Amino acid sequence: MGEGHAVAPLLALAERLRSRECRVTLLVGAPDEQHLLAVREARRLVRQVVVVTEDGSVGQRGVVTDHLPGLLRSSEAAVVYTAGRPDAVRLVAQAADDAGVPSQVGLESPMPCGTGLCHGCVVPVVGDDAVPRQVRACVEGPVLPGHRVDWEALA
Image (cartoon, rainbow, N blue to C red; front, side, top):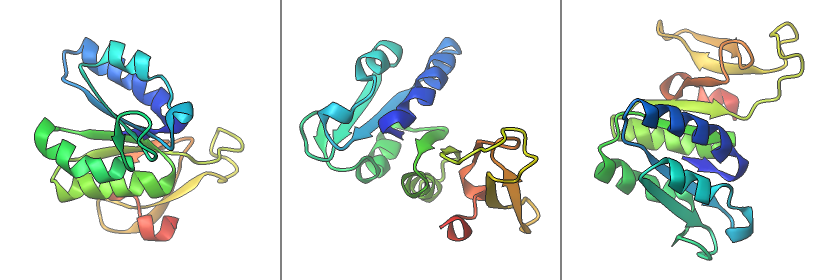
């Protein structure tokens, strides 16, 4: 699931998954038709592309997170991949968790140095040992297991 420019990294992932003969469904959202990114490219890469625009100008009307629970049920998803704004990504991770599907979330996070030295890109997580800690998005991420992100601390 991706909104706006966050669709771009998901297209590369979709292509890689398809090369491994994985079934891929891509849920793409935007406020309106003008803000949709690469829908034609997405349709070339995967069998099922679900388009949602807030104004209903293309595809289904609404926000992508409203359509996710039904899509999770109908697609029999094994994993949910998402990228974008933390508030949208959080809702996707929660919907996946509610459906019992693991998620991988790509967080939009500033990465000032890109090496982890400045700690300007820290993301709060809960470790496998249930201990809260921080990871550097540029080193340990930017993609993290959705159930490990400490969404309350991130807000």
